[in-house]
Length: 124
Image (cartoon, rainbow, N blue to C red; front, top):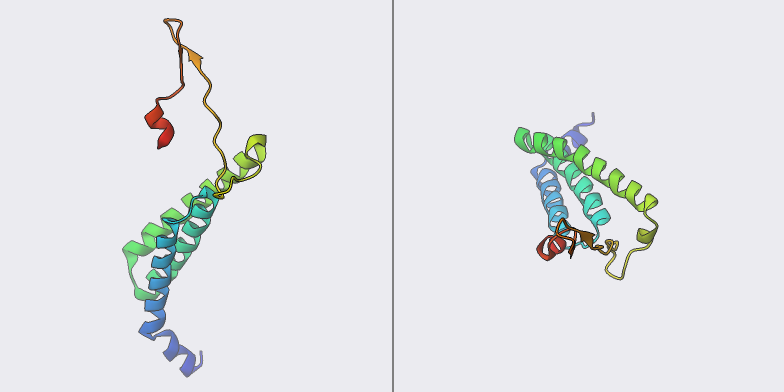
C-alpha cells in the first residue's frame, strides 16, 4: 500500500466521518413512514456502523450491527414477498407507506360480532 494512502486511511477524520454518517442514517430511520425505506436505511446504517467499528476497533458495535444486518435484510425480503402476494398493497398511499387491510368483524362465542383486535392494537 502506498504511504500516502495508508496515512490517510489512518486519519481520524475519516473514521469520525464514517461514524457521523452512520449516526445520521439512524436519525433518518426515525423520519421515514415507509417500512421499505426504514429497512433500506437500516441496512445502510448497519453497513456504515460495521465499517466504522472496524476502523475504530469497537467490537461491541461491530457485533451488534453484524447481527442486525441479516435481520434487516430478512425483514426486507419478507416485506417484498408480502407486497408481491397482496394485490391491495400494490401501490403506496401519499405518504409512501402501504395501506393495511381493513379489519373485518368476527363472531364470538356469545354470538356478537367483534373486531379481531382492539382499537389500541390497530394504532400501534
